[in-house]
Image 1 (cartoon, rainbow over the protein chains, first blue to last red):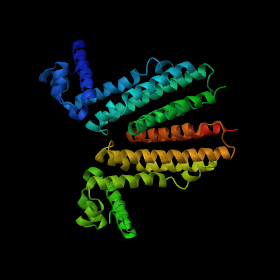
Image 2 (spheres, chains in turn red, blue):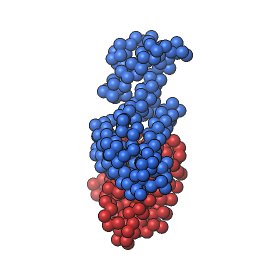
Image 3 (cartoon, rainbow over the protein chains, first blue to last red):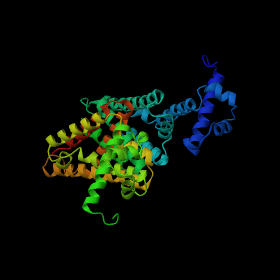
Image 4 (tube, rainbow over the protein chains, first blue to last red):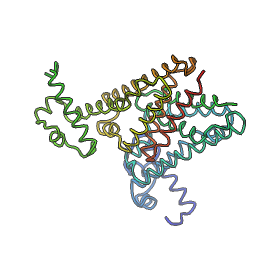
Length: 199
Length: 199
């Protein structure tokens, strides 16, 4: 079955990952055992082994992938339709609100701390998340260009990369300082920069 | 002596911290013992205890403070005189070069991983570094304003906070992806934004 999972198998695996993500968020990676996860998800040892034969690290990587998807999902539908200044404003508010709510707990960061940020599987999740996030920002900037709201001379890829860097740095600084000033500044200055190229 | 250190005492302590920083950079925090540090710095056990009575964590925090100072020193003299576009360009090149050379090793990051980023001492070092860095960027932006190169309407504090966030995020992303595209994008877009407000 691992080679050709059935729909039921995929659903069971997804349920385990989702339940594990909840336990890990509540208790922290360092204080969660496989038994905690089995208890929450109503999974037997053999079931857990069936879906994650390589053990805890494999399950943690699957949860990291789930959390990475969630980062983008939490920004929808706004991130997917950044074609007006109003939609950029709404997206900006959602991002600030999401990270203020999250505070200094970063589910993805703690998972990588545990499984090792340098493992190929972990790296692929981070670079995949960054690439998709940046692509959606770039698509939004091109939509602004198409609507005549932003100069066609704007270097979209570079500007999207800069905005993404500002968000990452703003979140990182917030986790040290406990306040979202830098995240807000990065978002507001980034949008102001886009507006400044108008016409 | 710990309460009123002599000049000689301060010099010895500084020599230990500097030597420890070198060993830690070469071997990594996880693989360095106090004996390694004593060997490199020619320090006896009782001397080490005299200067760092609380032990390894106290020494690691002192090294973290040293590394934080180094982050700003490495950007001088440029960071301290950002009063023309040429000086901004030179500073930008120095920052990119510094972090490309550093690659995916972050001495400060590994120290905090070891002593715990949440300890008050560690937090104070990060917030102090961020504050000083941002102040120098803001001072540079005000110098551009004074020289009529940037609009007097620019929100200097917010723009400096955004630029700092972009640098932090660019460095963070570089440590995952191994390339400096995002760091360059953040610096170049930040400077372009300043230029765009000219006149």
